[in-house]
Length: 328
Image (cartoon, rainbow, N blue to C red):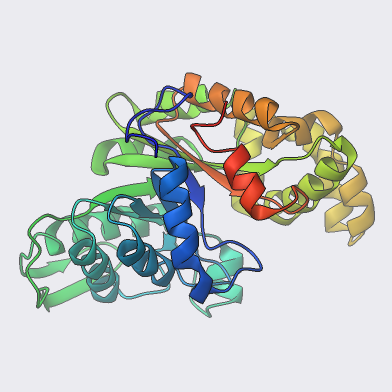
């Protein structure tokens, strides 16, 4: 078993996204124990249209007493502030000092189209939610008017010995700076290793930088690029991600994709994504090449790399072993 804090990437933490596709939740406790044995320190969930962000982490909390747990992320709109605080407190009680709550605005697709909730003033809603959570998770009674919502007389009914860490998902300067001011760190998504430096500069020093890194561990470059194009088209045509990549300077290379997508020609949109953009945003190649690519994220300021496995890499058990931080 790999000792905590020791791995070939030179970082204390090394995570992976769960739950795994095509693996039932009932099977995940065994996988969590396997990840722990391989030297993974963290498991992180997301929340879109699959599992919720908390239940898979509850399974992990019981299966392993070492894994760090995090949401990356749960939206601030789709739960009331009190319910969000209760769910965070529940995980923090179940896994003391091992749970981090990552929140974000999410997108108009998830919030408005899928959850019938207006996607108004996302920056302010995230700011207000973090301020509320800072108060509520200490056990303090919250009776306050925030700019985007009001909470009257809320107090957690179960006392927490230690509140969980709070992270903010951020793409552009305003939200990145908010993460630096109010949270314990920032969560980054859909960016290249070279983009990390620009994002970290906005967050500031002394903060955790969690990054979800998309990995397709195969030496079949064409297959990896096809899988990568599907993911890029699905995300980078969403307004918030399109704006993010404009800010990163990738706009001219992505404009043909955006134009084709707006016209309804999905096939042309996929074909318009340049190979070099896929290679920047998707880690692929041999296990050694993948680990070296992840290392570049770490070198540029990521403190918690979180792999997100894309289809096409082969047998899951072999993949997680090949990409493990202890692999050589």
